[in-house]
Amino acid sequence: MMMTSYANFPVHETIEISEISDIRRAVDRMVEAYERQSPDNFSYRILLPRGDKLTGKAKRIGLAFQGEFVLGLRRRHIVPNVREVRYVHDESHYGWLLANPQVYERFEKKT
Image (cartoon, rainbow, N blue to C red):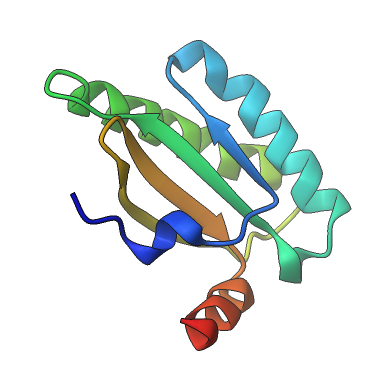
């Protein structure tokens, strides 16, 4: 199996979310980081479960996470400037990169 270059994308933190109950903690951490860090350097990787019977679960987790993240930013009156890329990270995970567009530009210039 060939890995994409996104598996090597530079992130501040990688968070694995395998259950709906993991979302709240991950969202709180990321919203706080977005507020604390320079938005120009914001970059996180979310790992979602991948497997024969897990695709539907990963989609539900992803949708719930996305809604909670955007809502968390809006509650703090933050307008997000985040680009996302979804990819196959490895045999047991989907990867989801959430980063400032400038971080993507710097990465793409290096590759």
